Image 1 (spheres, rainbow, N blue to C red):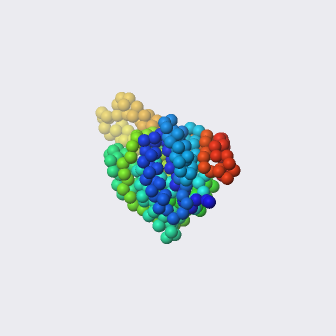
Image 2 (image 1 turned 60 degrees about the vertical axis):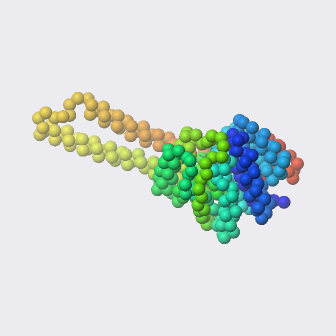
Image 3 (image 1 turned 30 degrees about the vertical axis):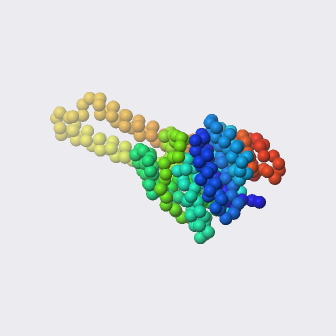
Length: 327
Ligand code: UDP
Ligand code: MG
């Protein structure tokens, strides 16, 4: 029987949280009104995570898993899950229990009321450092102002998606996947559910500063062309400044006997300033061109090393495949 609900959980070195995560998620699974599959996606963990996933699958056949051949990153891991799950209703949540699974029944209730996308919106982040809180706060607001689509603030990937939405997401071929943006782009009836973000249950944050920054840049560049325009604006600004400087120099030469414009300093400053503006602009261009390059290469989004629970009908539960085509 095909599952009605699919839960997707990306896992990257989460050996300390998996047990507790399964315990809490399975309580929710038991309470659902239809068959549930719990799709764990191993994103190239180097600890015991994969082994633990295998054991869970043995113990509870509702637990199925995909194992990516290396660490492809959270967004790609979730994408792999979306490609494979079969439920009518799909829920994406983190392994570290920062997204409380107990919220799922409320999300399903909204789905019943006719919403195809129910996303969880944080009203508070408990026990996360001021730096993370501040950067996240600022980023979501900048993104909201610049993005072509209305990407709600303070939402992560914790959400419920109707099958219709999942099919649209799967049909999108883009490589740089910023799932919360794509989700907003899809449309349909969307609604937020507010929640307080708990601290991580155990283990370290897997989103290092570098990964978070990459995700943020990806979100901006994938959903806004404003940064490209920024170099035009800066060009204008630089032109205005230099015009003003010309007039200033002229005025000093003509009317001020001992003009303050002596020495190299002013020239150096101007050179460095313009150099910075140009490099910055080239950098922005590079972000976009790099993405075009990624897209035209048309590589598969990920490679799979192991799959379990999806192919039971054909009897090959652990067939390693390198390119994902059909389910
Ligand atoms: N994760 C992943 N691949 C990565 C980094 C993280 O699959 O390269 C998973 C991780 O196991 C967790 C989720 O993504 O389930 C969120 O990661 P984390 O809690 O470290 O980041 P946060 O969103 O809390 O900053
Ligand atoms: Mg977390």
